[in-house]
Amino acid sequence: MNFIELIILAAVWGASFLFMRVATPEFGPIPLIALRVGIATLVLLPFMRSSLARGQFKTKVRHLLVVGVTSSAIPFCFFAYSTLFVNAGLDSALNATTPLWAALIASIGFQVSMGRQQIFGLLLGFVGVVVLLRDTFVAGVSGVPLAIGAALAATLFYGFTVNYSKRYLAGVPPFVVAFGSQFFASIVLAPLALLLWPAHSISLSAWGCVAALGIVCTGFAYVLFFRLVENVGAAYAASVTFLIPVFGIIWGASFLGEKLTPMMFAGGAIVLLGTAITSGKISWRLFQEHK
Image (tube, rainbow, N blue to C red):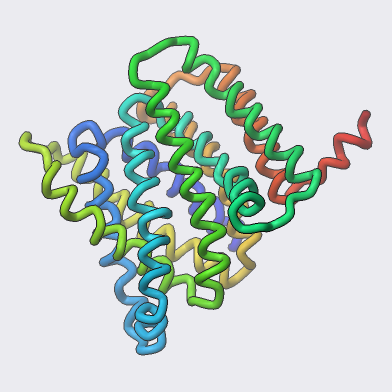
């Protein structure tokens, strides 16, 4: 049952890139994400009914604000912007670099020592990014380099949030963190969304994507993720990172007709391998033994 839930979670989070790809051109990145986190806040609100949850929310307001900005408000907007120029499958593969950034930031900014295996995994992962993006850069399409930079910046923020949460939100119930992050992301983005709200009418399909993003890909996904954390532990739940690109690529090719190249497959595989080594899922001794 836990494995099935992990697959469902990966499929849902992989679909978020598809929905952003469809809806961002009509809403714009900031209004779209403001709606996404606002809807997710309402979905997660019932988990704040207990006095204990509300009390922990109040005592951690400052840290929850930081997490809301760095885990949702900024990176969600960056990814939404990137979908204007980059396909959903490529974006989902870039999302897999999050553990690489998390390990690097832990070493540089949080004084966490990094062993040779992690260093090897980091280098391998970033080589994978270069391979993954080769065809895209060679094509020379306007706006693509900035979009790719935005996607990588988003994962950099994710990596920071992982370390910040471990240090300042340890022991806080996951649902409080989930609600707090979406709530503060909503507060931060609401004024900007009103200012940048599109003047043209928005199609029903785009509104459907917004609902899917907020209810399913954020609200429901957080509930499912933290259910997995509670049942089988954070390490198992975090392995969803390796499955998200698979579904991102499948959804993009199936529903948007996105073209896939051998270089994309090769780069994505290298990124995932580097991520697995960095996070300790695979030991680099496997490579040493086969030399």
